[in-house]
Structures are given as C-alpha cells and as structure tokens.
Length: 158
Image 1: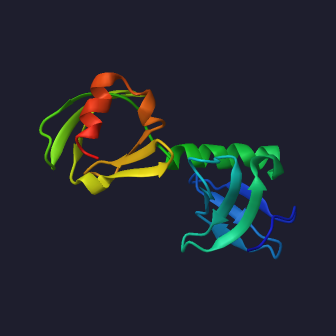
Image 2: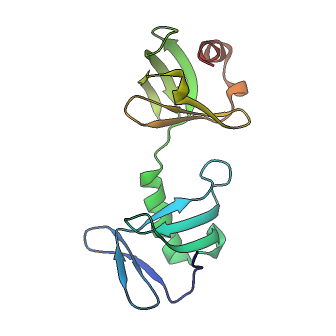
C-alpha cells in the first residue's frame, strides 16, 4: 500500500471526474475514495482507488488529508455512499420472502422489496444492513432502539 505524499494532487476535471496526479506526473482519471470501515469507523482509513480497483494512495484518517482535497473526497463519498437510515418499519406485506416493506427513513418514507432473509445482515452489535431487491442498502443503526412495532416486524425475519 502506498502512503500519501504531498507530491500527489487530487482535482476534478472538466467532466467532474476525480483525477489523481501521482508523484511521476501520471494522471489517473475517474479515481474514487473508499472507506476501510464505512459504518464502524467512517473517519479512519481511506483509500483512493483507480477504476480497476487498484489502490493509488492511503490516508490513515480524514485529518491526514489536505483541506482542499478533503472537500473533493467528502463530496465524492457522499454521492457514492447514499445509505438511508431506517427509523421505522410501518408495514410488511407478508412474513415470508419476498415481501414488500413500508419504511420511514431519515430521508422520508419509502417502500422496499426484500428478496430473502439473507438480505438482512448484522454488521456489528445491533447494527443491521438491509439490501432491497434493487441493490440499495438501508441501515438500521441500532435495532434495539426501534419502536415496538418495528422490532416485532423485524424479528419475524431474523
């Protein structure tokens, strides 16, 4: 893994793509940041990857990134890491899968389709990740903090 040296530069091109210019002056177009621990430690460990998934540079934490570049990285991550947080499960169509769930998220109410029980994954402690049939990821930060109805509905699937 290469470590960040100030001889790298990160910028956007005219098409809005992130470009990393390495120490040798090579342009890597369409790079993207990836968090090592996106949910459990979002500020620790960030890689800049090229389009083939090869790591070009590594930051131990957000504090190690120059301010101008940090803005670009955070913008890019916000666009890539769209992950609504489920605050309430209001209704499920059936307790078998596939089923349709009416949920309330931090971004408003929506409806998702759960294909299989395996699409509900425990990540750490009481944190759950739910993938809908379109591949969108929804987060339940702490399943013990959900209201009674939501817990009861969720328990039928785990």
